[in-house]
Amino acid sequence: METIDIAIIGGGPAGLTAALYSARARAKTIVFETALPGGQIITTDHVENYPAFPEGLSGAELGDLMYRQAERFGAEFRTFASVEKIEPSGLDFIVTDSEGAQVLAHAVILSTGAVPRRLGIPGEAEYTGRGVSWCATCDGALFRDKTVAVIGGGDAAVEEALFLTKFAAKVYVIHRRDELRATKCIQERCFENEKIELKWSRVPREVRGEGGKVTGVELTATNGDPDEFLPLDGIFIFVGVEPKSDLVKDLADLDGAGYVKVDHEGRTSYPGLYAAGDVTDSELKQVITAAAGGAASAFEALRYIDERLCSV
Ligand code: NAP
Image (tube, rainbow, N blue to C red):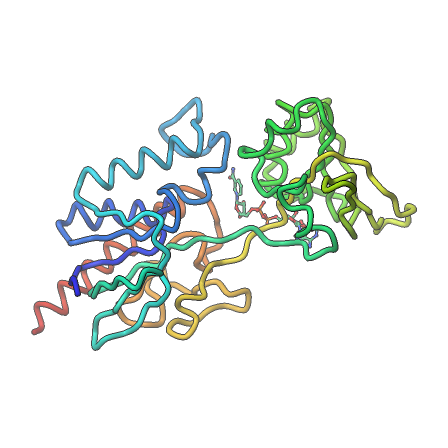
């Protein structure tokens, strides 16, 4: 079995930045990524709040730049490699992927991020890929001149609604309260956009379809209005995310929502195991905070390995 310094699980901004710091310190570093490097931002059309890019850039471009920078310093990538297990072995960890390949790592950084939350209503699963989508960048162009709805009131929902106006004739934003959660500047753009109509105080109850295609959504009003059926061609769901922390749930402390508890240096409750980015219980979930968490956890993991090796 190959022995390495740091195994990084997840190749989003947190993992890629951790890889950059680790590889620059000449530590043997492998990043395991279930798809291509970049993480959740790959599906974001435009990132305008990452410093040094005044005009903004696409999430895919930003992910690719981070990937190339880490690779340039010698980080190794195992793409399309899903990690199945992280098991302690003495002071080290055995990391096993879905093909059964194993490495022995002196330290592990978990940067697996989060996955979109499901609504859990009838029709949602049945019509996924038939009008129900979790990715406006991937599927938006399929709805040219159509009527679509975005469900949710956070940054993701409102940004993706704005993106969808490039294609769709009409975009409803369906939110369960009477006030959006999204950042004010994104809200302003949403309110100014003539293609967007807000459906306030509405909770989706059922996705309806016919002939294998979405026809609309049943909405329950929470403000005393009558319930309604909203005819639609497509439904984009952005109601938050859930952390991908299963791999370490028996090793490290998680909070009530399943996020991995970390200190400011990215230490988890288990020695040698670090975590960074959206999988952690850090308050702010942004590309820049994920990157910062990746840097801090790599720095701390390197120090931990040095101290261990020096004390032998
Ligand atoms: P979020 O901020 O947690 O917002 C989720 C939205 O979905 C909320 O408006 C919530 O309503 C609604 N919601 C949750 N469960 C629901 C349900 N069962 N039925 C109907 N509505 C439901 O999630 P997010 O927008 O995916 O963002 C996740 C994190 O990434 C946030 O920290 C966000 O700031 C960050 N992010 C940042 C950017 C950016 O900076 N450009 C872009 C995307 C995401 P309530 O408001 O009533 O709770």
